[in-house]
Image (tube, rainbow, N blue to C red; front, side, top):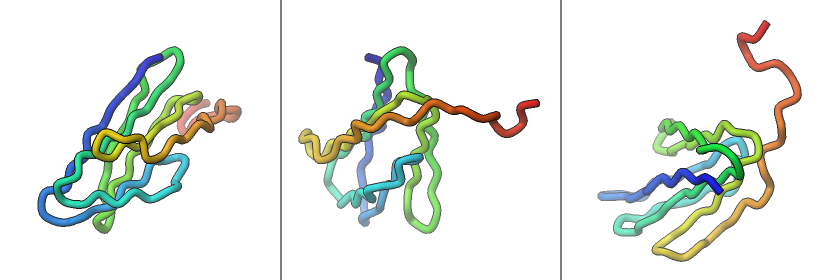
Length: 95
């Protein structure tokens, strides 16, 4: 299993994290908490990008077949067992 881990920590005030394309649930990170988003894929290293909009961090996973879990203070709080479905259409920019 291949994995990418994003470590998250709030230093002065809470912030929210959403993992796309699942978009649920919304995770609230409190100051002093150590949290992780762990993305797994059976055959390739998952790619994750991050962006912030209005105080919410959006993490986007791109590889079909990926799953993720949210870990707070070393304990798994949430697991998404539903993998990103295989892409069936053309990607933007493809001929």
